[in-house]
Image 1 (cartoon, rainbow, N blue to C red):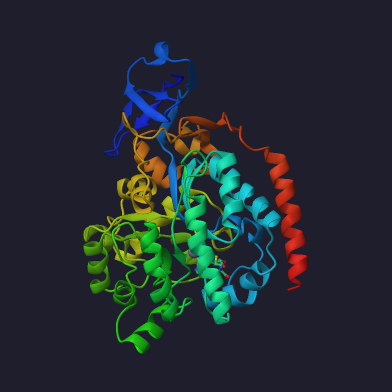
Image 2 (cartoon, rainbow, N blue to C red; image 1 turned 180 degrees about the vertical axis):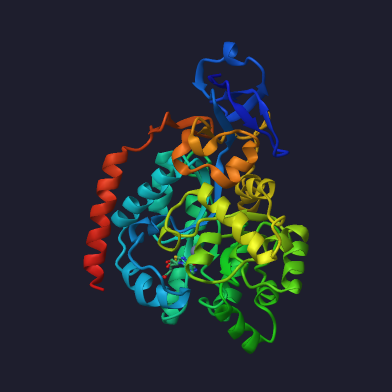
Length: 432
Ligand SMILES: N[C@@H](CCSC[C@H]1O[C@@H](n2cnc3c(=O)[nH]cnc32)[C@H](O)[C@@H]1O)C(=O)O
Ligand SMILES: [Zn+2]
């Protein structure tokens, strides 16, 4: 057994309180052995956490990781126009090489900002899976299936790829990678294909993940054609089961919140994307009160425009209060829970908590910063004041991915250079 002791830090516990403790990890099993006093003597290696906060690694519940290539390419538009006029024409020119470069850039940013696990919907998923496996992160990956603008054969091919990918990438990266079936949304995948392919995904035993109720424009057409709200329609199609998770859930009525709670389907809240695309304010406090599992996601870097879960946490708290018209809504503890255990539960990982027996996925945050002074309440700092650049160390599955701000599994300069090149070539090819 090889052990690593994280020493001298303040540790965020599963009940969202902070205590002074060391953390001892079994690196071979990727598991936390013990949280307690003076554990350094028993360890093969130590990692300094003095004047630092040890937190569960953040879990990004919804992303399109290689969209880092489109960061800052198309801003200041609503969802539909943004996708159709800017994003989809460029994405049509993506290659495996560009997706590899964009993924490496995305996971580099994740590691640097303390994220250890994420759920992702995109193209070239086996390429993404290899990049994630090499970088050392944990992820649930799926191929986004779309039917709009395609003929029947093309849709079937897309959906079959979605199923094949879900089978193929599952278990990669020493089991750190798992999969899901990911129809893009309830309005961009036609009913007949949901009816055909959702049961096939069930046979594979993978969860289903999709965009839902993101904008009013997605709700109205379903109400009009089906006579029911989108999530009642999703339930009819067998897409609202325990373990499934939807992205956004902005425009939900009480009946839909009830359906989510009853079914055990989770919601990934994406506050920055919802604000930037002016999609609306998700009813996060009401979801929490109804007992729905809520996680937090960044969505793609083109609608955010970063992948920092610390930014996202602050946004979630702020917009949650505004949506509820109540400053006590979505408090710091709730946000910290959502960005760790909530997202992990939602996407089906046993991470997001620091205790003996839990997976050793964690981040260490430097507290010796002016914006983290004084230290009345470290949970408050995590929700409201800490920033990506404060993350010192990142550990996933017991392995050090970043030590003292130096990423160990990727060559940072090379990744940035490759991504810049691939992004420029992509825009050139798309000729937009
Ligand atoms: N196989 C599909 C690919 C879908 S990947 C997932 C898609 O979601 C898009 N996307 C990114 N952010 C959002 C969002 O907030 N709402 C809906 N779609 C988004 C993203 O650009 C990408 O095209 C196809 O043939 O088009
Ligand atoms: Zn999305």
